[in-house]
Length: 141
Image 1 (spheres, rainbow, N blue to C red):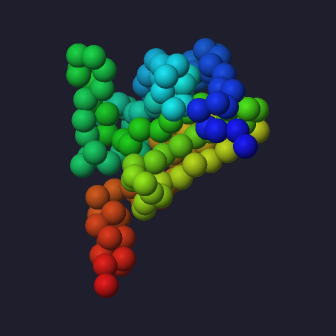
Image 2 (cartoon, rainbow, N blue to C red):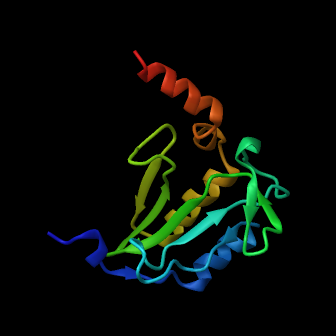
């Protein structure tokens, strides 16, 4: 059995990251080699860019905190031939709105990311404070 940390992860080519940047999204530097998902990048949408957003999730981005983002972060990485898009806010999870999508092509993964930030808002709204509160009320007996 291959442990997650031993899996082969590949750096995402800039051409794919640039597609996200061209849409106005922010893309982090790849996570360090010692991270559980090395070469993973984090993706978010600045609050001033039209699209889906959750005002209650607004926070700053970057080393100087000069950009406000109003979305959950997505992780984007390539592992052993599969492209992963992960929106995971709960630990251990999964919690309301959490997802882990796997794609066979980078184009499909990019389309998934763009749909999260700019498409049907239902996926992002599932991560709203209201949705999380409602879900926790349902599980309390």
